Image: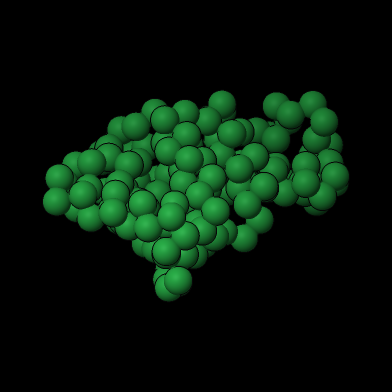
Length: 137
């Protein structure tokens, strides 16, 4: 099995199907991942970038739940490797249900995972989560 990193543009072509030739190629790639013939590494920064591109009002205009679900389906592939898979899955679910940016939902998901309810932040968006106890420095 070979292993490689994957860039945002490949994810975008797969999710949107905006280029039929590239869609066919990405479908073949993800079929190989599903079959265990290819392993892909996917850094969290690429996830954030993919969400930004897919939901951009200038580009693809996907709604947040649709974009998050597409990435969650990729995370379900066993040879689609990402650090902190469970935290990222939780972050994508929060992202789909809120207007928070991906950086904030990653922090919230990481705090849940670590069972640490206190973020130091000036961002009042954290106050929407009753279990969090935001503090300002």
